[in-house]
Length: 341
Image (cartoon, rainbow, N blue to C red):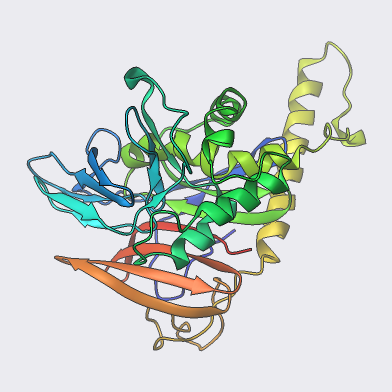
């Protein structure tokens, strides 16, 4: 299986591990070469303050290393409205950056947590395409309608209150953190909801990914998997084994692993994430050297948003998928891509 990323983004050295499954959520771990000098998002990035509705400040308190703000990160906090960001960004060591295009995810006061319980999340995948479209728009209530529709689809009150899922269902959602195992050296993952590719998340290094892991698995992809709520897996005749025979158990487990890996490989092969060609050959967003399509759905745009030294932050938008990526030349540094519908 190959990483579904834009052609021209160098993924040399990356490899996929064996799939893991928890109900409707399947996670395929990604391993690869680490990119040094990036501040991790929990220990190296701090929410300084909420200036006012729709305006938040983040600080990189480190003495060295740039922070890559996780795409669509949000904060549940005490004594201020809960907000999420619509975009990623670079923050240099010792610097503070104000986001004027943040979105309030709590339509009215209430639902705050005690200070000891403050934590960050990533927007649920069903809201991420809308949030990406709204980057650069300074209107704190801009996501309330989408949040209300998200809640209504899942039988909750149709209000712009994301905490109806994230905080009130937190105990259920955090189970995904223990049911899916974060592996040593893992710096990314592919996420499937049912048989559909829902997201590709690649971090600069394993420390960064470990710090964003809970926000991704529990809150970005957990709600969609929880709402899908499939019944128990149907037993496969090949999984039968002689009771009390250790060799039989091992053989059955190995058959199951092979079957799941083959199944996930088929899902990825038929994913609707194909590459358009808005750029030149070999460039991010452009066709590969042969002109053949790559693997990221009918791109409308691959637009560079900002730079920090050799790093480039670009936005990917298309009918099937969207998100943002960070590259150093052609080398992949960070990616957060998700199904657009």
